Image (cartoon, rainbow, N blue to C red; front, side):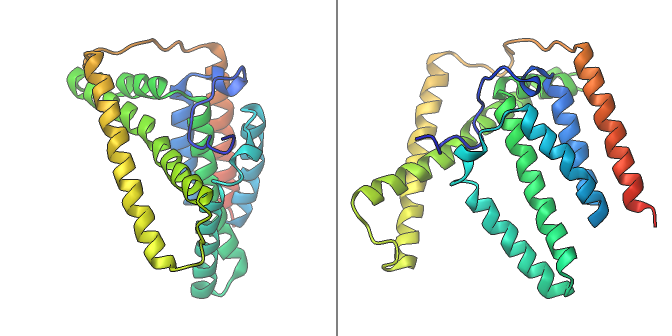
Length: 240
């Protein structure tokens, strides 16, 4: 079951875990926008930052190796389509690398930030506009982020069950794909119903936010260094 870890929060004692979720979410947002405007040189300069983020978060990369293949496949498809359209392999590699980098950043955020922390950050951002809208949006985000890993878990559970029955994956692939999709949909409905009952039994209401956020000096330093580095990479990328 070690591979069933992707897009789950894991409580560890790391620098990335101790950072305020607002600083991490803001950096992720800026990085994602920056990747859309980076050329090959800028993208290469951004790779050390991503590598350092993986190291400081102590990401269990080996545990993700099976489920990450799904995103590797998408990256390969992007590479092939971009290469076919532009005829430039360097441009195609950069496009695929951008997509995979966004996936990696999402993994780091989900691995180091609990859904409750994300909802508190969203509530803090939206609260000046409307407290009711902020609490409802934060609650929806919390449920969405919490439910997203269930999709991967349910898919892995179905695969393991079929593998235990020695099912031939090469026989009737289209029919098998439809069958897996139907099973996945039914299983997700059951899990959603379980979550609904659990929330109802706890008298869940989106207007009540649990926990608090503490912005510390390390968050200011992290945000400042990240912003300066991103601006530097963007400047190098747009300079002829």
